[in-house]
Image (cartoon, rainbow, N blue to C red; front, side, top):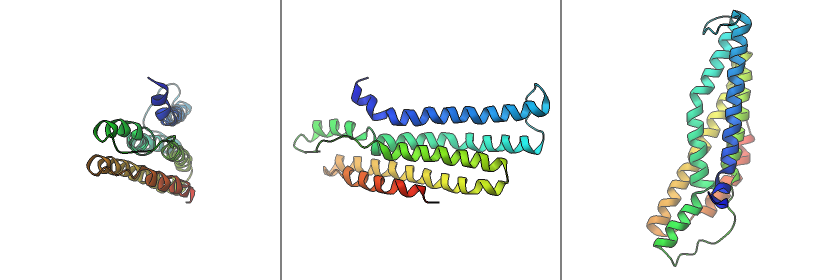
Length: 187
C-alpha cells in the first residue's frame, strides 16, 4: 500500500484496534467473574454479579458489528478515503472538473468512534451497578451510531452528486461533520 492510502485509514484502524482491546477487557471481566464463583469452569448462569457482567458483555458484543460497519462506512465514505477514490474516478470521467487540493480531514469518524468506545465503557460499568446507570451510556451510544450513519449517507449522497451532476459538496459535508462532532459530547 502506498503512504496516502495508509494515511486515509490509519485513524479508523487505531479506533478498531482499541475496540478489540476493549472487547478483550470485557471478556476478561466475564471470565474472572465466572471463575471467582465456579472455580475453574465457565458457566453461563450464576450469581447476580455474574449475570450482570455477562449480560453487559453480551449487549456490547451484539452492538459491535453495527459499530464497526458504521465507523468504517462513515470514515471511508465521508471523512477518510472517499475523496481520493472519487477524485480518481472524476478525473477519469470529468477531466475539466477542479476538485481542489488539501489534506483530508480524518477526524470526525475516528472521533465519533472513540466517543462510542468511551460510552460503551460507561454502559458496561453502569450495567455492573444499577441497570438504570447504564441508560445514559445506551442512549449516548445510539446517538453516536446515528451520527456515523448520517455521515455515511452524506458520503454516498455526495458520491452520486459528483457522478451525476459534477457537484462536489464534500467541503460542506466536512464542515458540518467537524462542527457537529463536538456536539456529541453533550449528554
